[in-house]
Length: 310
Image (cartoon, rainbow, N blue to C red; front, side, top):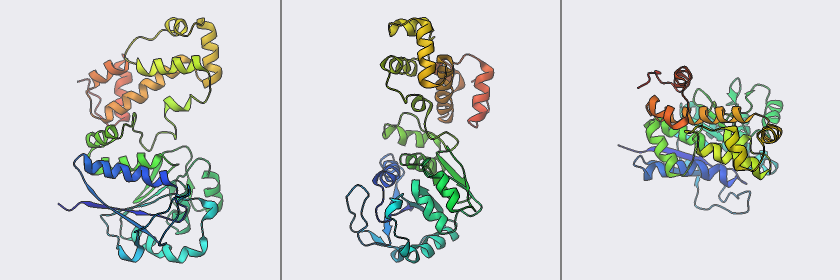
């Protein structure tokens, strides 16, 4: 059976991680037994990278004709150096690709290119959180969604900043080969928690760590690694040589949520991931420390499962 093609489109001053993250997912898929044919195209002979590197041996756009079974991914670029005088070189090609019904994706700031090409008119979309307001302002026909990893609108996918190209690529691999295989690829890439498009741009474990307090970091790390166990405030406080009252106050001040809320959110995030990997609910309950059957059934429905406690 012929491998599905994934064509990566490079602008000048492309961001390396925007490209490499998605490339690695499809490359690792091949290492795990489901190969893709990877192609690299650009309207430029030697596009530069925003970090100072350069690419060679890329195919010109006219050398690749997109078909309905292809995946086209436009990697994000440095918008401050984006040469709009070259639009005529690539817009018709990208528009023609979308018209075939092929999957067309943007990573990070490449959403602006899809908007320029008119492919986001009337569509829900997203981009890096630092550019969502600008995307909506400059392209009022778009429906920009904030704080999402990626958004699908028919055959058009837009992802948020940098590493979310990995999440989008894993989602596409999952659509082709199922969640168990996508999990295998994620595990091979040493990705701890694979996120879907409905998740926020930061996982629970990350979004409450924007502080430098060692005690609270130690508590957060302990919780993340002991979700299957009973976690008490007394034990956490003793571990960091604090009183329960002081730890409670410090944790809420630095993270914005209580210790109990943090434990619950981490358990829910882990449970949803395990359920999407098709683990039995009884095992998920044991692995996450969630004892409520009603809570598990609700999470199972959110993960697209029947909710049977088998």
